[in-house]
Amino acid sequence: MELIGKITADRPLLVLAVKEEAQFLDTDLPVLLTGMGKVNAAIALTSVLAGVSRPSGVVNLGTAGALRAGWVGTHVVGTVLQHDLDGELLATLTGETVGQPLTLPDGGDVILATGDAFIADEASRVRLAAHAALVDMEGYALATAAASAGVPLRIVKHVSDEAGDGAAKTWRDAVAECARALADWAAQNTPYRS
Image 1: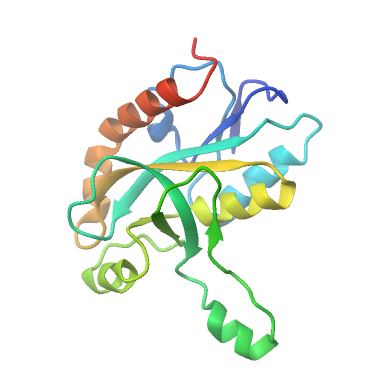
Image 2: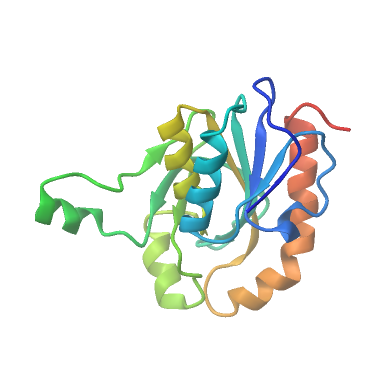
């Protein structure tokens, strides 16, 4: 976890998983680098939101794999779900609902599936494509942490690869281009650019 800049109540906090995704940001806004995965994302954002000074909102910028053919570009997420938690099974065991999809205000109709597994095989991609268009490793955890703290969240993802065979190599090759696109989105859609 790395926090760059000072959090104030009148400005949003930009949250990204890794420095490679943030490399072209040109902003005076605070930036939180959480590390990859749901646990790192949840711990980092919860720690920051528990601090004395809280941001006006959180904007998660990051890369995502496309689960369906033809998905490219930058997308504002409307719903996020966990693909690696069997909430239905847990509900039958405990009688409690857990891990329900979360709807985000200011989002569109894009559904993002979050899980700690990097989707690098066709069978997983096809299974997830029935439920979501994009896949990442942090979105659901960030949405849960922000909702628990009562802080509004936007999730913005740029497609880095088609999830499935060879996705890990493609992500490494595409991350710089994605970082430029995310920086451009942030410059156009968040205030306080330097």
